[in-house]
Length: 102
Image (cartoon, rainbow, N blue to C red; front, side, top):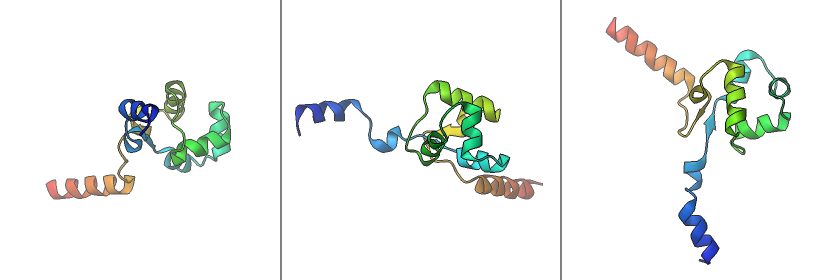
């Protein structure tokens, strides 16, 4: 391993630790928005929306705040360092727990 590779390995976390997961695709679908619609509202290119949705690009803090404000949700409801559980699983589990406690 060369010196630059050793330095990089020591300073950068592994790929899976740098990944940011998001719910953009789900949020767009819930609101009937195309990538172009969201891009126009945020002032970015529609391809950037696709890159973010696929996890190929992590938005900067300023863009993350704009997305959060657009959807009127906290940033952590849209972005996470851990994979999101499917909403159907979250809702179903909550409904099942509520019915067993009733």
